[in-house]
Length: 364
Ligand code: SF4
Ligand code: SF4
View 1 (tube, helix red, strand yellow):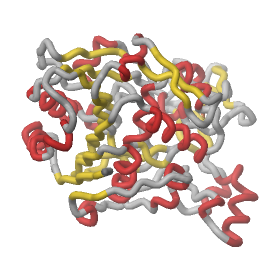
View 2 (view 1 turned 30 degrees about the vertical axis):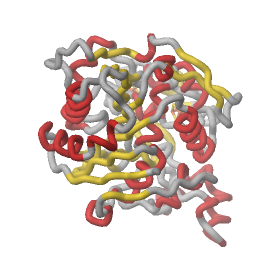
View 3 (view 1 turned 135 degrees about the horizontal axis):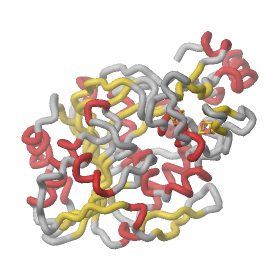
């Protein structure tokens, strides 16, 4: 049965987080026995200090890892950040510098092997890490955040980090937000291993996430055995209308049981500038308006030359091959697929999302 547990935790205090984990021990460890191997997937989008709320907080990750080790499991932990920063920095960003245990292995997924799985979009197959066939459970530790492309990034979107970086550029060419969300859902449904989501919503991110939004206290932890359901709960906590989120516009439903009074957690968050209601989510004249002007409504990426250090990261991560350095980034608007990876991965925050005249009249 699909279940979502929502608990209040007000600060990054390892003891408080461990208390929640211990109280829900049976659900979190269901089906495991001593010495089983498990994989932990935090959100390590890029190298950022914890207070920016870009990545799963190191104290949160450490609490989960220590909990799993104390329960005599063999723990593999790793990710494939969008902007690579090398395995030597992992212990620090994971909060594991002082955790020495022979049952703990920190890995860079980019250098592990990959295996094909079937999906319903993009050539019907994708590659995900081979180690997922070698573990008994995957612990998905997303951060509760907004996202300029998918509007939210929680449990389902965190799985995108399992895809090899090279393949992500191709996948980002999927122009439609709903198709892209279908792809994310497909990853979740094609996993060869059961997952448990333990979501860090103690401090989340609102506004123009997933990198340059504002940290916001949401005081919550979500534990679930279903990524889609965890994301529904997260969206409700952030005060979003789930009908407006592409992931929940798909022809897919999950009914679950909530343990916890979700109403008490709701804290309306600022939406990303790109949170424009799609024409399919509107009716009548509004729908016609959105349909006609959609190309002019959506904000577009642009560069702040005062911040840009001309490093070229944006051009190398551009799915549409739409950026050339000359000497600052120049955008080919015909090639841009509005994936917003340039905004997400610029190390200096030099790429911002610029509203065009018509989009200034559309409230998000
Ligand atoms: S990634 Fe950012 S800093 Fe680097 S060239 Fe692009 S805009 Fe400039
Ligand atoms: S310019 Fe930015 S938003 Fe456009 S395709 Fe390239 S990375 Fe994506």
